Image (tube, rainbow, N blue to C red; front, side, top):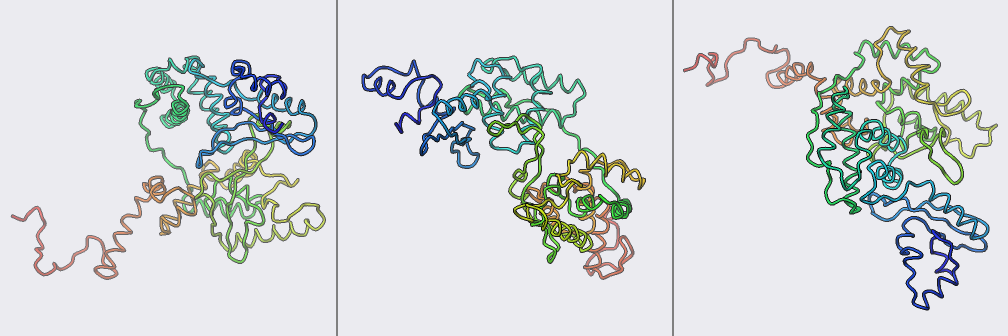
Length: 445
């Protein structure tokens, strides 16, 4: 019975009948489908008593390459387990082939290859960019018929509609990844997204606070009841999804540090867990990349204010039924719920900018402001890169290096002071070194 219990249930067939057909040497592939193919979609495994484990294939782990399954325990009869498996399989898009449209294929790719590996927000962004930009003009084309010129024409059309080169390139990178996976699955021989001509990205102007504006922002935020979370954003450079996910256990008042271990997301697509639709619910997710898990330093003043919040929550915790105080979020709504980034912007950040008479920046620009002011203050690029959770120092300098042009003269003067002594003005008169002519280079013979 154990062997039959592992056979998936795409068609109703009894265990005894299946074994009898095997013993008689009957060709069962046409009736049942190959076992390997069916196991790739879902399985029912027997457990002790009247318990079953329903397994639905989710794709392969990005590092190990091993298959990943969603496991759902079911109590009761096998028919109940079959019903649950059928329900979960019905939520998946139909399995594609070379004759499938690009629309159908990308739906499968997102469900099987993207959602199990990436954060919910990233998967939602992929889906949005494909449906809004990449697929409207080419989504009906069959996978096997898709040509490079189809994609090139689609990108030219998007450029003509006024979309930015960055948006077009991002949509292309998603589509390229989808088609590269189709190539790996042997649905197509070549990736039609290879070798295309893409619009050049012009360096966008990063908007930040000046030092004086940052000070004004800090003063107004310090007196605002909801300003502490914005001050943390300014002095740490954390991403909104990171500082809104901070728990009391992530705060170390003795060392004045915050530790980023996860991110906070609100499920926006129809993601399910068991029978429950998770749309609109909060969930914690992995950080953007491994280097994003980090410990950052905070000023003593900010540390003291966070300590007050933690102490206040500890007093409330005594009368609550929560399992662990350390799991409480540092920044919460008055009702104890996670703070929605959109609400933080509309109800706190934008009104604060207006009251202070400051430029209308985005919330994310606080991160850019931190990075730029830190580099201008002489903080090493390595430390700034680590604080931001960037993948490399090179990426940090590529992003913010052009904002440091004004510091080149100051750096040259510091070097001059080291070599020629302090107080030597750049370009001032000095005696020539022995063997050196005092004449300008142009006048030399």
